[in-house]
Length: 443
Image (cartoon, rainbow, N blue to C red; front, side, top):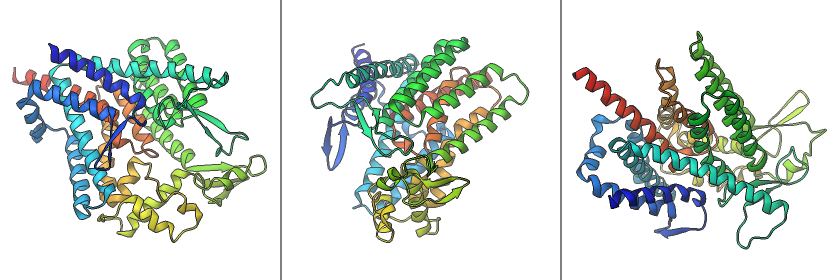
């Protein structure tokens, strides 16, 4: 009983630590940063291991019980390991193998815990909600402090940005206690999805009201681009869930999803500038975030490539350097530094940036093979949607994963710890359903 109480406390502490996950609270070991979140997870793993020991070990090594997506994860780990072996002195390759090995251990540990004690499914979902509500409080405090110009020593709850061509003045991003405002939005998202679907799934007016409010918070105060996906995908699934009996409902769902993916990809990788009405000097003065010259013109607009476009261009060049087929030992950052020597300021200024893409990381590092593997990894939630029966408890998990897999065009989400916990929640439920089906067949 003491272990269970300690486990509950550790789980809550683990999730609350997401609110400071990338701050200065870390320990550096062999050049790798170990954050407080990781230290707490080590404790959680020890508690789970000492309670189950042999069962946990057998669960890890029993490849026959793995879902297709879990086998894909193991394949990803193997190719990351092979890349590290090719150049074991490369720090970036070492970082990749340790990080991916870590999130796999995290995933299987949580999945095993959910299977053995399903009460922890509810507890983890509740912890995601805690993060959401505490984040709302942080936003309120941040706005209060900002507008009343209150000074807080050594703490900045927002950051100023001056590189937006659609704004004549600098704008603020509320980022809470995190360094990155996008990450602040990311950690809020799962708790919000669980909150609205668990409480207002059958109350359409309340559901839409809370969705609009949350989307406005993300868009106006945090100013995270993911608000577009949160609103469109959540609204789409809410409509689908209430009208899925309509003929061809799933066909319409996939068509609209495809249009959302296409639109989001375009507006996050290309900037449409009316040079007459919009301050063009912002682009010229911030070459990190835009191509220096427009890529092409479209009617009265000049179309520039965004920061994400430039990183994808580098990934294409990296894959092209080994004919898109077999990967080499060189990592993305090292390659971008080499490429920048042959390019102008456009690419020199971003030579130390990582790919910022779930997909183009693997395309640049591992070519078409890597891209194919990561697509298989990411496509499974869409496959589940194509099945006839979708359980109501599964829908919030699918929405969260689909939002982040689309956001993966511009963010390397595969290293996010909470994504693997969402995956563990989904596949623990599927694992339990599979056991129930097998039990019925045997009886």
